[in-house]
Length: 163
Image (tube, rainbow, N blue to C red; front, side):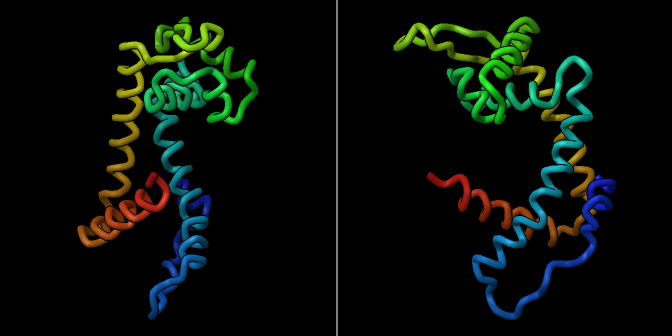
């Protein structure tokens, strides 16, 4: 994880303000740190994906695990790729035994995607490895810093994942 911090030169402490920060200041802070945090997450994930699967394939599996029954068009939109690219990726994951397809009940022309048991196991292994790597990086923080980080992540969760 240190290589990510060096890449972005994340050494400066956040600016201290005596008053409650405004939404604009918080947005600037999120834009400043989230890309670096995502790079660390990607690096941790990439180490555990292995050679049999690409990171985009992992992201596809992860998306299908969160959105069972999604379509290939949904995968394409999520990954930001063309429909043929998503279709080829899904086909490779089906051949590898990680995904299965079935026609949608309401529209037989639409294909629904689901993880197989093997796909779930692969996803769990990658997740567990990345989780261990991120835990090691965060273990350098003090208990007070960990509490503040956890509370801040809860705030982000409510801001961005609320209905």
